[in-house]
Length: 93
Image 1: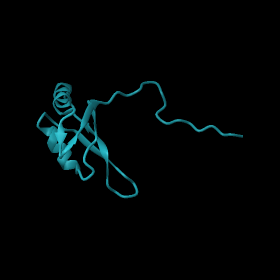
Image 2: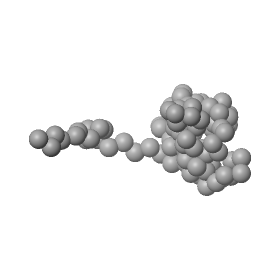
Image 3: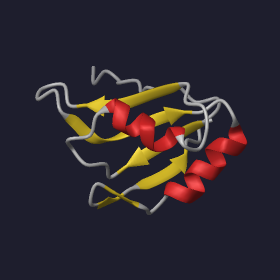
Image 4: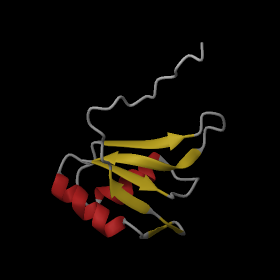
């Protein structure tokens, strides 16, 4: 299951995020979103957990919890089916 984690501290590192979630089960992937200009975290990221029941436990336990002085938001990622992920630009001419 893919999990969204928002309102993270800007100084967070991927290993800290992995450690936070690993107490609930196996972590397949951590993707901390970085600002392309500054190279610093943008304050949100994604966790991939292969076991759905462990992922559900993590979401319930960590959503609205305090991590490094910030109340984080944790939720399941819901993907849209059948729609193109990128919007196509239309030519004005």
